[in-house]
Length: 179
Image (cartoon, rainbow, N blue to C red):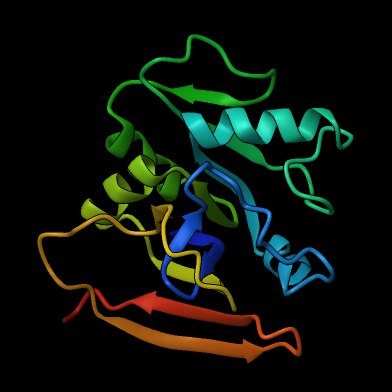
């Protein structure tokens, strides 16, 4: 079965955006493991807000969601969008059931690209298998937190850690479903 991997940049104090939605604190000066990660995935799960931001970015960057990212199947989870770009799949009803079905399809792993609401829902339903956090050496003090409060603890198993000279620390965890 395919894995869903939450992969994103986060500040040391746990924020994925600044208080005004900014992400200008994210390092873009080198690869930071993205090309290797791209070789593992062939699909993206993305929520509406993140999708709209990504499409605005892609419009000015040769249509790429992220520089160097290969073409992937894009699944947009939204109850309000009526259409998405050609080639993307809009999931508006039964999102978690649809995500479960997609995980069972043949293919590579799936990148949970973003959306706090989507991340929260997938985490609560036990559909996220790995966390890949690029922890940036900055304290924003406020903004959008990576995780919302949960009803229970989630045990993690460290799979890999790598420190870069910029101070960024890449951490990969497996969600331990047996604890």
